[in-house]
Length: 166
Image: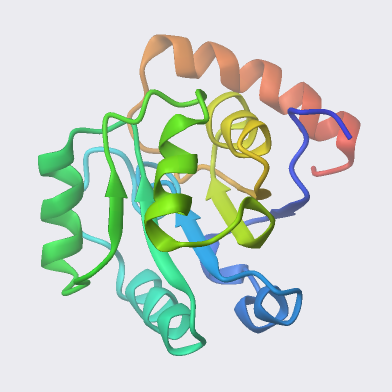
């Protein structure tokens, strides 16, 4: 498998089959914030995403957010959603795998038991695969993006087509 290719592709985080992931033995859910759970620049999680995260916790998942956004932004979003006890690695330096591995260690979970969810092939999927996790790519929510991200989206579109994800 290519280090860029995710194990799965779904449209939205809320489309991920949490019970299925638990049945596969996964214990830690590491999720990106911007354009994965909420549009970039938005500081509130949609109610459906909060419900999905609550369901994940009810199923026994440890939760983590690994984001290249600032720690204060991530903390504010989680606090507004009433989500306490979520492991956070902000200013994560994705795609480098160190932040993913750090939250795995803090959760006491091996990489084989960690699912990594994000909207970008060249940060979330690359970093998640590099860290040895089970990667899931979601469609981006269309929030504001940096110029480099917009250019990388063109390459991502070609890869998704080649993988049959379109």
